[in-house]
Amino acid sequence: MKGKRFVLADGFHVKYLRGIGLKNQKAIIGGDRKSISIAAASIIAKVERDKFMRDLNRVYPNYGFERNKGYGTRYHKEALKQFGLSQIHRTSFNLSPYL
Image (cartoon, rainbow, N blue to C red):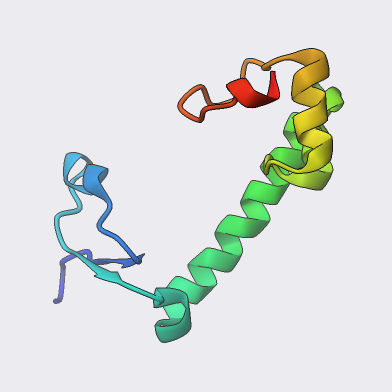
């Protein structure tokens, strides 16, 4: 595949890749266990996301993003009840039980 770019995806096809000129991809279920490239990308993505959540914690300290990384921990759910949604909470998730 000289001269062509190829994307390996962990588990599912990524829909928007065609829109940015990346047509060639292969989805591999359990890809982080089968491909060193996917495993490395997963580690890099996690480290970067954790850093991003620490940065968000400085802007929105009431939600404990530094500890929960945005996941629905008990503390995070209690913060949602107390403070409501921030500008960065995903409205695509049904968070109404926690408000």
